[in-house]
Length: 187
Length: 286
Image (cartoon, rainbow over all chains, first blue to last red; front, top):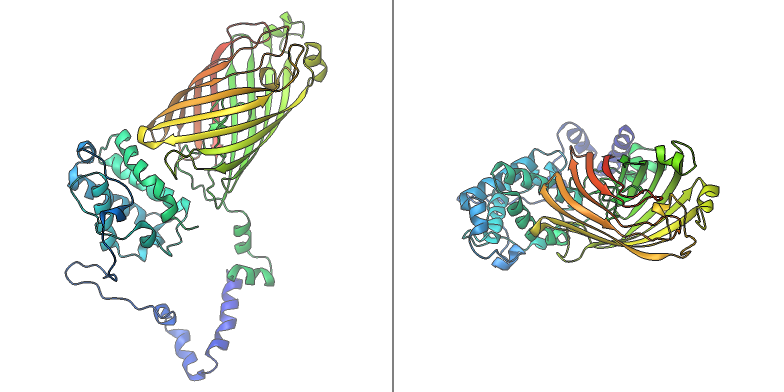
């Protein structure tokens, strides 16, 4: 690491040569990486608290799995209230997990909490429509790996266990999600 | 890119991390346990799984010790395995087969031990144990090269060689919707009693196709119970060899420690019938 740092520092004066008077300011003030990389941050919607996305085709098919028939699964998960508690808890665990927290830290968690709930609620036939994007689009450029996915699965398992969802029902939900691995992991 | 720049200047910890990465990222218990032959699997039956906890971007390692206590014999196995990118498994195992009192009755001497080194390799060809299409299992091919250390003796009882190689083709899937793990393997082998009594025999000298299967029920993310069946060749005239089967429970005490207990029936061994007993296996994996 020290070597890497010195390499970067050695490169810095070169980059700022055209504007020598600006250099001392940059050394003291923290770098605005958003400006450096031209990142434009959209304002959150004052009503929903979500960062607006460009329009996309909405469909339950975006959930990536066919819903269960009947009410057995929805009941096993405690209906919509139970599902919301489970998906929120799984995301809370993920935000606290050093292996994967960085993926979520830069994410619109307000929107993710809503869309993940909708997705699971739709698949369990608990009376929701999924309004989120396709799995492939939603995970584009996240650079997620199989190990990241496994970490999230473990958190979902723990959340379901805490909520008292019977183990066979837990696995039936995971069986719906497992075939999506190729669309949500990239590396 | 940053790493390669640093490498140009000098050796860096960054480069070392890229060469061999341990992520210990598999789901708990999905690395399987270790067979008595050292390859990843159940207790008796080989699975298509790759040992170690590493995922496709990492390396995993595992070590095991197993004891099988039978009425007239005892088998001890220990070994190491490496899983590379969840694609290739390389393993070594040592088997020590103690004949105890039976050794005296067979004229070998009380407590005589047959020993065998097993070097094995397995490659995952397609599919995934957990993910991907629900009906596509993880499929692997493997080879187990067994080197018996008691050549003169096994030839004296009718075996053709003391060294032999088994070839395996395995398909294994965790059917999540039913919480069931199923595995099937075909093995091309001429091993007598897993190779401990040599390879080929006076009755049949050539390889034959044998089957091994496992069926397990997941009771929790950490507990799998089930049974296994393994057919075996019957090459030696002096003693018949029968199928081996077991009932097992594999329990992941933690992410890296798995304990397996099994009730094993290997049938008749070297004229001693009804060899049923207990197996206990400890696996450490990273």
